[in-house]
Amino acid sequence: MSVYEGETPRLGWDMWKRFAIGATLVVMLSATAVASAVLLQVHETIEVFRDNSTPIPGITSVLDDVEPGGPQTILVLGSDGRYGDGKGVPVRSDTMILVRLDPDKKATAVMSIPRDLKVEIPGVGTDRINTAYAVGGPKLAVRTVKALLHLPISHVVNVNFNGFQRAVNRLGCVYTDVDRRYFNDRGGPGGYATIDLQPGYQRLCGSDSLDYVRFRHADDDFVRAARQQQFLGQAKDQIGLGKVFGDREELLKIFGQYTQTDIASDNDAAIMRLIKLAYESSKNPIHEVKFLAGQSSSGNELVEISNENLMKVIDEFIDVGIGTSLPAETAASEQRERQKPKQIKTPRRLAPGLVDRREAGENHVLEITTRQRTLPIYYPRSIVARGGYLKDSPRLYDIFDRNKNKHRAYRLVLSQGDTGQFYGVQGTTWKAAPILDNPTDEVRMRKRTYKRYFTGRRIRMIAWETSKAVYWVSNTLSRSLTNRQMMDVARSLQRIGQ
Image (cartoon, rainbow, N blue to C red):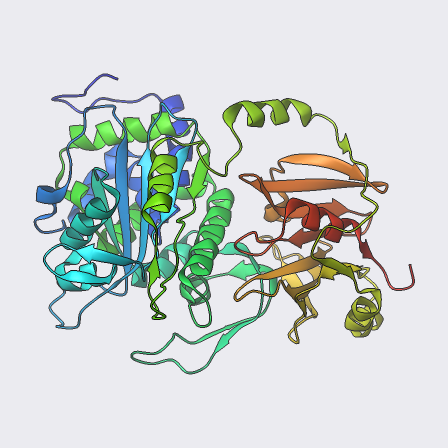
């Protein structure tokens, strides 16, 4: 790839357009990075960014130079405040996300590092990884991540979460599939943040969106990371380029005011080189790398990762395609098969772990079935044996689309049996809900055509449509239901008396 020197090069509109799509894909995987996409999209507004941003002190000494056009790894840090704000209160990194841009690979790798991961912090000793940020800020956080993964880090974005809700509001809020009831009314210093969200597909704005992605009461790091990536992935799919371009100056101001980054002090040519790399990577899909850690054997709140699993994670992050995602050849083959629904023979027996609970399902939806006629109510006859319906379910409510049209909706919430794992059934008269865009494939079962949505090899959602409404089954945030379980739950959906 050519290197730009001297005068900042000018890119054609087609290249800017393609880059904008890819840049938005990548930066939406961090908190207020919705706004940072604009930095990498419109070079005429670079000065707006510089006027409002603050470089990270001394960070360049721990970052790695890479050859122009070579792969680059970006560390995104999220916290409650700006490091070094002078308030004297230690600030811990609430989120650590690594993004690897490599146009030679089949996907852009993204990996969340658990904040309670047990690591060796240079000059400090053994502690949880987010302590590195509290003690030495972004600089020590970078050194710690590099010592753990033995990977070069090219850039750092340090995000202050206080700007997240402003960016979400500025971009028109986000429709999100909320898996369960989230409630906590005991906030305050040192405690968990207050939150009050009902389950179901809904529009989240400002503080609600921040509360949702940051919720950690009764959840572990892995469920929380899955929730963040779910929200940010849905946000990425809903934000149009017209909105980003039309509001670029205000978004850049938000990004500058609430982030610190090493690229704030770069010259135009260096920023444009990163732009071109992101553009080349934009043609690839996002590949989420699961961090294979588990609870510490010592019984404390830390999590640990074995050397064997650490090597697997590093290999998958560098060589995208190793691990749980579909190989490129398989994905291409499936793409060719998506022209018409596949015919699937339904198994005679339920998938392992499922049981028939028809009576329980009918009793659960009886009250909302009698309360309205617009939306036919379907419930799953087959559910996971270890779990059951939650007391906050079912929920009958209205959704308003962006044109303020009202649609009827309901949500059933079921526990999978493990902590933080909830799957659900959603029904709504809103057949054009954004979550239904871009299915992976379609299958035909029991005279219904189901749209399936995959993440890697796991089904995250299955949807089907009637003349009056659309229905879908959502997997847990960690996608703990197997593909066969998801399909059996979907095909068991029925109305009372059927």
